[in-house]
Image (cartoon, rainbow, N blue to C red; front, side, top):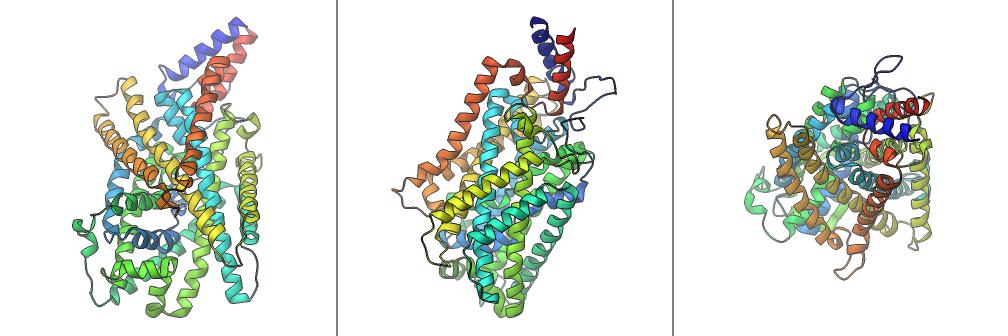
Length: 531
């Protein structure tokens, strides 16, 4: 037994030591690197630059943001300078990406956030981050099922005169997403790509129509005036707007399935941040042009989520608006499929490294997809949708349960979790390079990560402070601390389990964040015991 432990420790030291994060361990059949393994590996080389980019951008839900997030921000917070906020957040997330993308060149692990955090801050903190990631992305996905079901129910009622509860199309979507999640990732990427390109095209057509037919104030650039970013609502508006970027950080999750991940992942991340910042800045400006800078806030308060469609119909006609309504739903489906794929891969990575049962750490033999992780996410989504359906006592067409509760609560809980993961990952990047004696070489990335960490923590602080506003609850509502408490509880549970592993199962603790290197670690330990 003593021999086995010493062999495991030696193997662990080899993986974390001289070979660095790109470490390789010889095997009878040759080397295995961190993104191409044997029994517990996702299928490598399935995604190129285009496939990865489309998968990542689909999660941002362009039409959902323009039709949902932007009117809410204008209406609730009354801040006209929303376009400027998107550009500011683009700079913050670009700073974050400098270090995060560099880590993707050194660590190829489907656990992305928690793997990076484990490599920088240790396995215990990595375990806490893994639990937060699993809960945050699950909440984001479950929330989207709520608004997706509500919108489909409304379309069926309007166009086919079929009355169904929102939870029926929501559960149908859960089943379809679960089925697609078991298929090859390159097939998923094609589905996501088609839906994303259609969404983007529709929004661009609206933007052009708004510029061609502006309100009485003309092509005003007032929304880009820094003077518009004053008042108590600006900080909370940042919290709303940063949720629109959620998705770009998913690129490293697919590193093990990407050809040339050292190059492609970083390239996709920077392009995604730039595209989202500019695209949303221009689209939110187009809304102000169509309604007028002085009219955008009153219009958003009056029409809420109907603002985009109300501005589209007089310019592009009822048929185009109807098509946009339908494709608004397909866009949400693309986003929910993207989040499903991410959660399944986090579960796979956690199962491979002992943070979840080992069954989650194996892939489907036919497609190479993380089948057990996909099934877990499907079951969780079914339970959540049914739970909210059972508590829904509103009449047909009432958005309270599916939109104001499931979507709003899930979206904000998930966004808070991702914010905290990004801030923690920024700190982990700094520690990672400093510990490896690369501080001087990586000084610009370390500086960028430090600035990003401070900015992200400030935004996260305001998110927690104003959570009651974000979820539409009163200032005395318990939701203001109960919902953020979900993320805090996940972190505590993960940290506690990480501490338990460190004390009771140090070999398992040493594997956290190693990815496919954990497979080699087990082989080395087995060889030691055999000797």
